[in-house]
Image 1 (cartoon, one colour):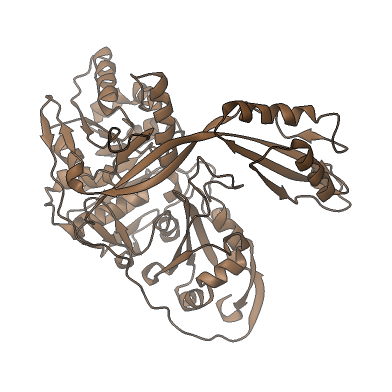
Image 2 (cartoon, rainbow, N blue to C red; image 1 turned 135 degrees about the vertical axis):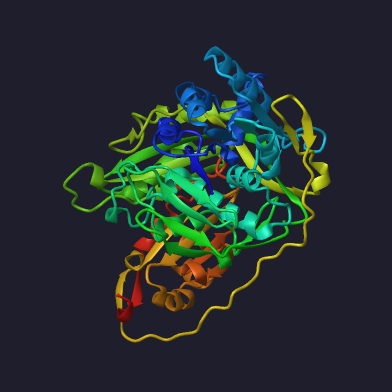
Amino acid sequence: MIRIGNASGFWGDRFDAFDEMVTGGELDVVTGDYLAELTMLILGRQLLGDPSGGYVRTFLRQLERSLVTAVDRGVKIVTNAGGLNPAGLADAVRALAADRGLDVRVAHVEGDDLRGPEFPDALTANAYLGGWGIAACLAAGADVVVTGRVTDASLVVGPAAAHFGWARDDFDRLAGATVAGHVLECGAQATGGNFAFFTELDATRPGFPIAEVHADGSSVITKHAGTGGAVTRETVTAQLLYEIQGADYLGPDVTTRFDTITLTDDGPDRVRISGVRGAPPPETVKVCVNTLAGFRNSATFVLCGLDIERKAELVKRQIGFAGVSWTLARTDHPDADTEETASALLHGTIRTPDPAIAKAFSRATVELALSSYPGFTLTAPPSDGTPVGVYRPVHIPPEAVDHVAVLPDGTRQSIPWTPGSPSRQRAVEAPRVTFGATRRIPLGTVIGARSGDKGGDANLGVWVRDQNAFPWLATELTADRLRELLPETAELAIDRHLLPNLNAVNFVIHDLLGQGVAASTRFDPQAKALGEWLRSRHVEVPEELL
């Protein structure tokens, strides 16, 4: 087998994790996942001010502490921290190694960056590459592989394919590695981080996950001994349901059938993943396009005590700007015994093409300090505003993307695309069952949930703890029922996908986040807490399931 660990789930994750993973136990490869749709926007803005930038400098600082140990232990490093400039980061890694007196073979993968005539207005335009470029670099003897935009799971698929010598049509094996990669990609979310039932484990400092991948594509998810958190079927299930879009998980190397995943216990902090089936990838390649679309600014007014709604209406009239989105959060309680619990929050956000108007919005909020509602105060001083980025996915033919592995000796190897086939989401029929007496309780008593963003859509995965409860979940939690429980989704299109093998239901809620996280004015712009809101709703649950 090959042991692949992850030390970063996003740009800003625990800084010490790389050192912890390299020194904490046996490992063959350590990966670092830094890129998200919002991250690409940030790197694009960075590149405007510094043409030599465009990559995640945090990774270099982590490598300053970990590179010597990784080389001594023979641990290879694979990361997408190259962002918009993988060649630049590869050069920086070489310089760091030379400064440490190390002989390190560095390679990188490029071709994802499609800025140019086809996307003339884009700040960034990046195709999602697969794992074969990474595999080529490792097969050529690379110790460190730097990529730009690859799918998150490719950081695991590439090393596994190189280690076992898989063929491009080994779809079941590639699908198994994709599932392992999907579990690892968000770091500690697989080991108890952001877990619905966090009170049942020590979630103080979860360790980072490891996948022991086998030649047949099966794997065991675990973590280094002595680290915090836990690896259980439920922590793995929660991550499997995170930000997917149905039973067919589409990737550039393989379409992975999530309805074929089998999870079994394999000892303490060990969960085996097996039975995963794969099919050819889709016929097109997904491109993440970010464009700048004006500016935004926001302010939050604290409204305390009586006449909350009239105070909010006064602020709206006094501000007087067009294009402001207002949300009144009634966090106040009557006859409260603290000032904070007596207060509501009025959020105002403006979007405008003119940076001067965004700045003027701040000035207008401050000018109200002595001439508005009684008890006027803000949660924080207003800023001058920030640029708005709009995300959109585009699908293009594979031949429009030149996937290239730049090997340690500088040789450029063109990576062919695997022939694809038409993709579609397969429907699974819901069982029809009836139950007896019920009790009205919070839904989270019997279900776990995890949610997140996919561009402007929100993804919500829900599972039951007892497999005997799945027929009830599939019957009870329809798309229409979800709209009732989460009224903010009432007017939106919702796709529902059943995953009986995981005792789970997955929802894609279209357009809840508008034009994506960087442009969303929603209270929870990445829908991270959407699942916890659902779990807090009270429903009638059959007593036989309690």
